[in-house]
Image (cartoon, rainbow, N blue to C red; front, side, top):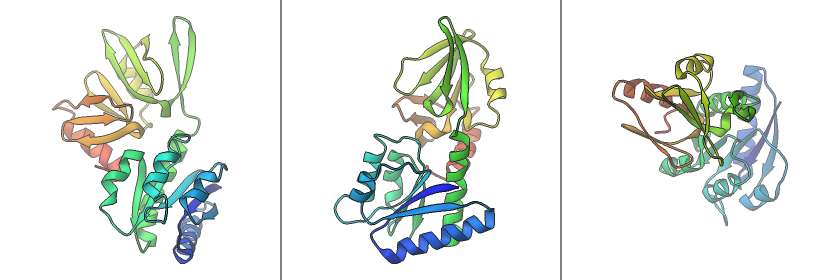
Length: 236
């Protein structure tokens, strides 16, 4: 069961989303338990834990974009699907890690695509960890907290959200094999990036959520663009 928060000031639109979620659930044999909040303030005052958030952008008072930024200060994992009348908000929305966008009126087709990505993110983030041997002992780090991993002379450096980089001996090739089913992409000969931590994708550069900029090598550029746009559903 996926606990789903719908933040929408129009009751008819909230009901439409609820009905579409039910239809998706029946088609995919999953269950959604939905909670409706009519404003961003109601959302921010709700301290319940949710697996997924469908968030309207244009609302009175605090709009959905501002609310998403505030939400990210205490929950950096929940997938957010924005619902909007204007597709122009899409670029700005990815600054707060949007998983997808639906242009009103919501349809089963566009919601299905966004839900496919969102539920995949929920499944991959849930409980996935890396065991990292260090001089002071074994560290177990959630994959979602790792922004990227680089290697230099057989030393792997794990860049972790909110922490100093963590060094250990190892092979990037072997690590990439171990993470074959994880949302990581080879950026260059010496670097793997976590696709869930990408803030921007440009032609030859990734900007990660911690502000680090990763140069995409020429030989990996096409593969990076294909994998990242496929995984993130065309975020950039």
